[in-house]
Image (cartoon, rainbow, N blue to C red):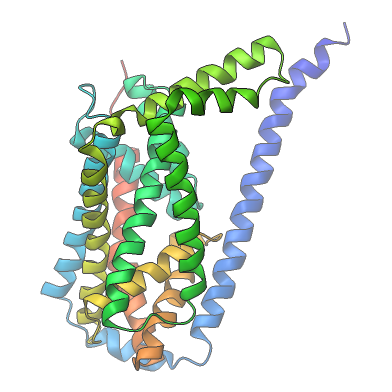
Length: 336
């Protein structure tokens, strides 16, 4: 009789714990964003920022930034379809919706978008969630490799700010470790799978069987990359995708009348990648400002000019990206 009580309460307890964790994560992100924003705006002449924005070029440069939003989402969707194996059940156009929704969730609460788009693809196409998640993990690896490659090229043109050097070294180390792990799983899948299974020997038989299924689904997720042409193509799509962001940043400089060339735009993008890895406030408020300021101020752009550029990026790139995700979420197709 009494043994049923914990069973009925367990789901509620888990839901309550998950809600508490989400609230705590949101609170930490808002606090971090507030701290970033205070650090970025401290001592900035906000009247000067207002003047820069009021006299900005909101014509062709602004349209170019908006075009960058569309290109980024489109390229990201195309690369993801390739990482999923160009399955006949999916098209790049159909993946635009989960990608946009994922970007919205990430902007609202850091690192939740990957789960959101995994669930959407799982429900719509029946792909196992571990398979989808491993494709996203591989996607993240290619993101880091592309960002490091672009940072190396930009660093040959203009000095990398000292604040970015330590995070770039950490990213390079993590990318190397992840790359070696991926290579082992691609070229020695049976051995890698047997090693992973050793970690489940302490589980009961049912638990081992469940975990083994998840491992096999995960290995199915990297199966498309065993085709020799997919690795360089995935890397190329990654470069193009992140190039679209650098494009938008450079045009944000033109809107605000600040000299942000391609190399500086890439370094600002790298700065945002680094800061976005931390807990963030909604719409990356604060983190965006600190990234622009950390890169642009050392090269002679005024603090007011750097903050103005970050405001343009917020208005013309982040907000439209979130709006696209909200539109995709509200306009979801009806299920039958």
